Length: 226
Picture 1 (cartoon, rainbow, N blue to C red):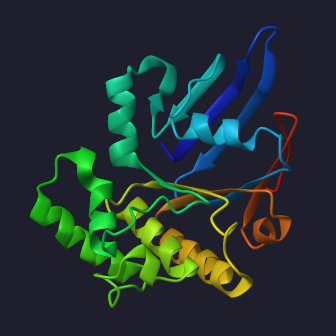
Picture 2 (cartoon, one colour):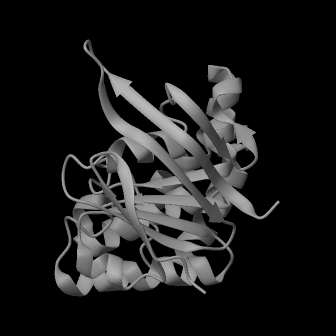
Picture 3 (tube, rainbow, N blue to C red):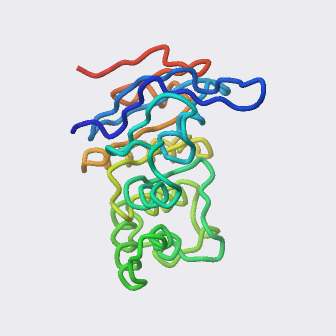
């Protein structure tokens, strides 16, 4: 099986009368791809992110993530899928203030059953992967915005998940820091991680090899690479 994400006519509605935030999305992302899902505010990107990240279930259609049908899993099984198979990076860094970079990253393994000493060892290794091996004991308030986002990325990949979801990962960064984060996502992808970037930034999307455009809860364009 090459697909890590497979959505078949996926819909997600909210409220009464129901409003379709995801209006029948069908798409496949293969293992090893680097993809942008791009669209303006209110296009349904966040809903799609939540479904791909198993934070939400579709109200119709079938969503398969790493071979698992999301609708068939209970909450415990979904939590396990997220803990072991999916990494998340958000626009807001969501780092614990007053806590060192290495402990912030080690916390990414809290729900995997890994012993504390091993969590810290892997955290040191992950920070090295993102170029922050010299910032292990620095707290978030001692780091630049770009460095904080790198810590967040290290936390997302410390468990070596096959899928990384990055939601507006450069949204709070200046141009130079944002470019460095995009370069890092390319590097992680080259090392084998499937990376999906959700963004409204068309310039950022243009730097990625595949772009899926979303509008009104539907896929309106997909530049599938040759």
